[in-house]
Amino acid sequence: MRAAIIAMMILLLPAALFAGPTMGVYFTYAPTQMHYSPMQFEQFYGYIYAQNTACFLTAAEFALEIPPGVVLMGTTLPGDYVTLGSLPAGFSMAIWPPMDGWSYNLLVTVQFMALSSCETMVDAPIRVIAHPDAGLIQGACFPENNLFEYTGLTSIFCPYQVGVQETNWGAIKSLF
Image (cartoon, rainbow, N blue to C red):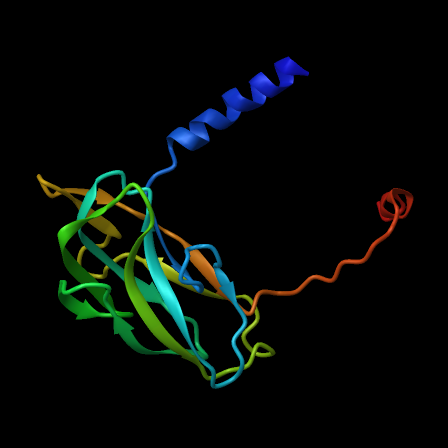
């Protein structure tokens, strides 16, 4: 048993070591929920967070891919930052004072409105994608302003619901 646990830890170690910086849209102020089921004509917020930056963040550059049936109503920055462009087309921001990149960093609060209902918008993805001018989702670290790339995450509007019911193991095995 001990050997199995050690082997599992050794196999999972590379995944933990190579977990790079990510950027995604969350639907709670704390970056935990990456899915949301809005009502038709509901206005709601999405929060774009950067994670695992591992430096003091001084700039970020990205764009959004928004599904049909959802429109962007406006954006709010958490500070007085210098910005170029607009979402969803392409957004660049210079941040001062630098953000502590060893935790989650709120970059932008985005207000959305759902024009469609979840009956027509099942599993609709919203993605953080590369800025069209730079071709990358990137950030810069203080003090040298070294550039690095983020991995864009995908969130889901109206996730497909799968029903579950209680049953015994014999009934489950009989399905196969």
